[in-house]
Image (cartoon, rainbow over all chains, first blue to last red; front, side, top):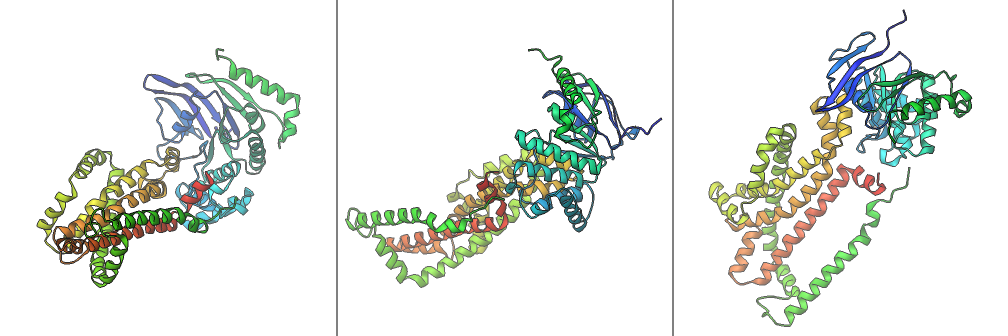
Length: 254
Length: 263
């Protein structure tokens, strides 16, 4: 047997009052794997992240970390919200350092060092002293990703990180993330409703069914890496995109 | 990355409309008073108010200083209490629900009633003035802070919680900075009440101060000196009001910049 997955989610259920949001959701992410969850809005994708990060508690089901149950004190997840939530009273560097300071438990000086390192690695060196409102939306998301990584957690939870960007910037950031991920090989769970994004970035994709079911389809993305826009030209990529789109639209009336 | 024009470069241009309006109002006053419609001792022209005030500047100055002192110290006391109370209100929903109605209710007690009471309780010295200024300015500052805390972005709080941040840490890093713009709004409302409150307290009993000066001038039917003192208190309030913008620019420079860029 191979090593147990980094995250195992088994039979997760959650209702808000009478409204069931998740019902028997199971999935897993291996260490160093990039996994996407594709789903329509309101299918409970964000609820899954809330449960993983401990903001909400599940009604039923198990969360496994490297094969053992997640303890209450475990905080293996770094969450990146859709809106960047960068603080205007902090510079770019200070925003990134906050992740290292609060979540990573580093002292102020060490956190700043870590922030500088990350910003340099992300090609954001020139923006260090700027304030978030001086940056474009795409730049802000890059900084937000740096802050997420700065937390020093095992697993990144990216919650539609490029969802609010224009199409051109979105593609640019997807390619940028792909390049950085090739280098860093983080364990990533990405929520998106962009099929192309899922194909371009993921090793594996889950398609979620409309509320309140679990997973409608699980599909590996065997496209070779590193991936570029050319990867999408392959017949296989088009095939995959189509398959995922069909699964995404199945079960939707209209 | 975008270039930002700084406020102070545009400031002189911005001062022209309010100054023009003030000159206009002054001219209307002057002409109306000179027409003699009300009698020159009932409504002296602005020019006489200014010259009378200037002639009596030693006494006017001597009475302005205590008022300024009362306002500044009362305001400082108010700030300290308002901040402490706002933290309690933010930390505890129970405190918010039980304390807010009391605070709101306290605002319905008129200043005219409060001023003599405070003097009866605390005597004729400095203390009752400080208490009155603090009481009057406390509420807008607390409301500004509490509303400001509540304006914190939900996602920002959630993000901090997923990072494992404690409540004090969330307060310090998110809630307090988020509250500062609202705090300065409350501060500006409060500071316009502060001078009036000090004058009221002096009216109720004091040895010196603009309130005492106005009372004395009024008792000897010197309307020109009464109005001169009113001008001084108006200038004082304007100066304090302007000072809040200065402090705001120093404390939260990001606020004006981020709003100008529209991010």
